[in-house]
Length: 230
Image 1 (spheres, rainbow, N blue to C red):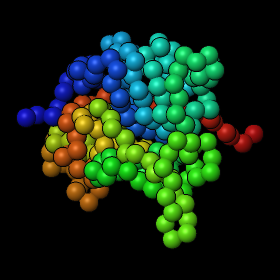
Image 2 (image 1 turned 90 degrees about the horizontal axis):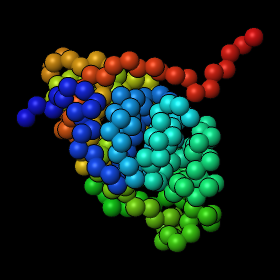
Image 3 (image 1 turned 120 degrees about the horizontal axis):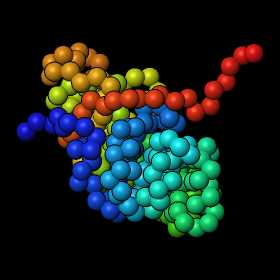
């Protein structure tokens, strides 16, 4: 069965209200822009979004927050989004803040089929409230569950029609981990090539993890915080 779909609208067509989705990227780098825009147009509501960050007010996941389509955010860094802050403080949005390494490892554990991980991050803090703590060799570790996501939506630099993906630079931070972890993984790519055209030595995500793939359009590639010399 072909994994190639026409566009983002076709790729996300069956994402229902209340779904849990992983959204790849780091800051505004390597985010699935086309699929986010398609979700806004489709109007899918009550989403639980697992993402390193929450975008900015008018870009990325920030677009879904503006239209009140997100019920819960599970994130690590959320500091650039005023609408996110407003919804959090008003009680409109559920938020689970997770240390960045823990977020990444919970994604990885899901892809590896591991039910839980043990991490020293968060022990003795509010992060540990209500969670199991175990002692290994005299050191305490917090038990964290692997994520259970209905969909993983990622963005790659190049991909082929079999779903093999190559990520570029910082976009490798969360995209490959999430691509392994969704029950259904959707990949949008800047360049889609025939199967066999990619050098196997440079493939970051094997196509076996990817269920749908399409070539995206009109990528903005914004810079979240631009610092330059005078």
